[in-house]
Amino acid sequence: MAEFEEKALEQEAVAEESVEAEASVDTEQEEAVAEKCESAEDTAEQDTSEEAGEEGEQASSTEKKSFFKKKEKKDKKDEQIAQLTDQVKRTMAEFDNYRKRTEKEKSAMYEIGAKAVIEKMLPIVDNFERGLGALSEEEKGTGFAEGMERVYKQLMTTLTEIGVEPIEAVGKEFDPNLHNAVMHMESEEFGENTVAQEFQKGYTYKGSVVRHSMVQVAN
Image (cartoon, one colour):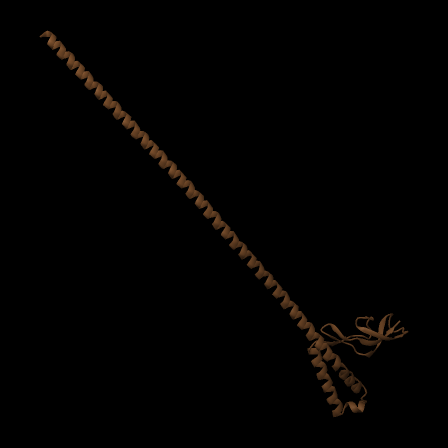
């Protein structure tokens, strides 16, 4: 009986050891499975992180390319704007120069035309002066002489208003730009190189000589 009990106890102990061994194996398997799961999760997280990093790098690269493209487009537009602005400025400057040149040419043409007309009128003035100078004292009081003098004064007033002025000659120093010396004389009354007599009156139009004075110069 005692032997039977001992065998039973031994069998129970063996059974318990077997159960414990199985439990230990199950625990180890569970831990291994857990470790595999954790490893898989870590790998998945790492892969996800790497993918996110790659996507971020791709997105950053795309943004940079887009930025540079926009910058290139902007630079081209700015360059075109600068070129067009420069062309407009050049055109405006050329037009302004053309306008000034045209105005100057018109003014010069008008002055040349006016001088030509005045030059043709001067002989009429000379004839009036000769006719009035040839009148005697008795003739000066007649209506004809008074009419001639009035026409002469009106003519001279008109010429003065448009810019015609007589050149001063007698008693002035000889100026080749204004005077045309046709004779020379010895004179104690006038100084050297001084206009002593005027044969034909000279005129200027707005400061420009239309006709030189014909004079005699004292030596």
